[in-house]
Length: 513
Ligand code: ATP
Image 1 (cartoon, rainbow, N blue to C red):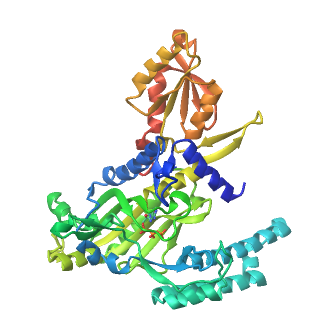
Image 2 (cartoon, rainbow, N blue to C red):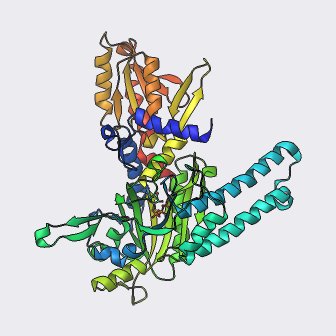
């Protein structure tokens, strides 16, 4: 199945099974805003718990906070967001569609890579076993031509970005012959900068309302609480502050479902270190974060690091964790070495001293910061994309199964009486009433067992138990495994022990030790 079709199916599956709904659905939706349904909220909460516990439980020197979305407007001046949190936009005059100019060029770069990969794939097919890929890449004229074009474009694009040269960005789009995917024309406007922050007003007009911003990242809430937490928590450097919360960006182009939203959620951790040690910590946090992703078992081949060519104004190193989505490798997390930029700026703009006295070196300094920043929604999307599978069964039927990591699954156990009579529902409820304190269980008695299994497969429930007539006498149930579909007879008294460990967040956290 084409990757695009798979993605469409995942989007409709999310809606059909109560994971993600378009916001304001009965009013035909609101662009790039989504709601999480009854299963989505559970999966999302499990992702957040996995992250939070991996930070705050597993590290003695990381604590959490929950800062407000509204903040003093000067914070965004100090952080550079008022002046520089921009994306370059360009319009096509014929289709009236708006694009991010940098993304149009990035897509063009990806096209050269695709052409190269196609040549390699064709040659592999032609030469079979004897194919020497490295040699082919070094010598094939068509590959070399595309490599040369890609590298030249890359260098030109990087320079234009670093020089903030909007005219040159437009020229690149024209020279590369990039057309609007809707109108197919090259009738482009000039490139303009567009600030992504949403504004609103606080206070009534009579009092003199002031403009405030909806935060575009949660990080600043951590920076402005650095002193509060360090002092009240008696924190010693190195230490970290973690936070999960909503962020808002008026994205120019909102495509690809929950990949790019205007209201989304971030999980960010700022780690404060002694100046000069930041690049060592940057490396360690890259490893720690990659291990967190890999523990989910989606396979190392589906992740890669992408080091930034253009560093943000505050950073001295930056790398993204990219995941293989159906539409290519895409960023899910950013790891940034933010220097002492933010704390120094807040010191300057607030007039408050923000320093740390290091008892080990007897010095006062402004700490340097390593940030790890991951979008909950993008993480959710990567989990969904990897878990969604259509499987051909031996009997010729197909089943849709969400192979979610058990610890993230919304429902851990379905309790199913075989029939709606003979005391089986009562027995099933009795089992459920015992187990519901330990993990999320769902009771279902409608439809055939086969149909109920399929519904549970479709929402990723790792285990189902069936209560049948024998259960009443032998105190055993049939336990079915989502992935293997194998069934075994187990004693009711063993159920908790068999399941709890496998479906708990702790099972994931233990892989990180
Ligand atoms: P992009 O280049 O895709 O716009 P970014 O580099 O601006 O992302 P950061 O500012 O580093 O992203 O934000 C950290 C994380 O927050 C990202 O890795 C992503 O997971 C998430 N994120 C950022 N913007 C959005 C958005 N509009 N919708 C959903 N998640 C987002």
